[in-house]
Amino acid sequence: MKPVRAIAHSNIALSKYWGKADVENNLPAVPSLSLTLDGLSTTTDVCFDPALADDVVELDGGSSTGKPRERIVELLDRVRARAKLETRARVESRNDFPTAAGLASSASGFAALALAATRAAGLELDAAEVSSIARRSSASAARSLFGGFVSLGASAERAERVAPAEHFPVVMLVAITASGPKSIGSTEAMNHTKKTSPYYPSWVEHSPTLYEEVKASVLARDIERLGAAMEQSALMMHASMMASGPAVLYWTATSVAVIHRVRELRASGPPAFFTMDGGPHVKVLTEPAHAEQIARALEEVAGVQRVLRCAPGPDARLISEVS
Ligand code: DP6
Image 1 (spheres, rainbow, N blue to C red):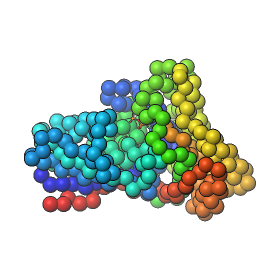
Image 2: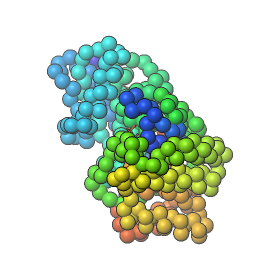
Image 3: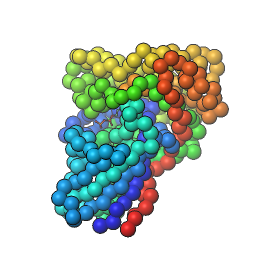
């Protein structure tokens, strides 16, 4: 069968997903809305090959083992079941961003894998169907099938586009504040939060209101209103995990220093708003006209290693069907 190559871009949630309504089927407990980024992409080749006795998985040039490999093989198994196929596959995946820095790669990774694997298995599915397959492996990956501004409802199987990339020209600056893998993965951390945090029910109750506020301000192209709701969503999510026993704490001194710098910068004029995910890096939303000034200011914060500049990005897509 023919090898297929797909590319998908990472996304940053403006309104966060944290916690599952259904762990077995990986359905989110709360609605989320993200921005797909033009930088930070994953390119994945998949080929189902009758000569293979087992699936072969290579990530960034190295052979994948353990849990990361298991999650990839599970996706391949679901695609095989759907395509009524027994054949094993060769998967080669590369990120164009520093994975060593601990930036999340599961969103772009599972989106690219779902797209390449379904097509390589001979399935002709629309983006919504591929989004559902990606979501089963990682809920944030469901959103990376679409470019621009994308939502995934509570208990929703598939993501949908809220607005295309060109609707609202914003810039997301990614301040890298540490190297090395993160302390605890998102899946484990959110399940732990649900089990042990007294603030989790409050997070689930209040996040739909913030989601609606984020969605309305994206549609209205109102960065001040968006920024306020985006920060509250991130802080409420982190508050719920900090109240777990034991606490999940992704923040470092540098993360906090960047947050304070962002607050100072916007007090002096330009719009700048922060968000954080399952790691110590801080992402800062601003307007194109102010992006360079803000990026330089963030580069000067002690402990910041580099600042990536990202614009709204495109849909996941097939690059080629090489023979
Ligand atoms: C903090 O999508 O990685 O980035 O569904 O268990 O794979 P799984 O979780 P994952 O969680 C992402 C959490 C987040 C917020 C977000 O992207 O909405």
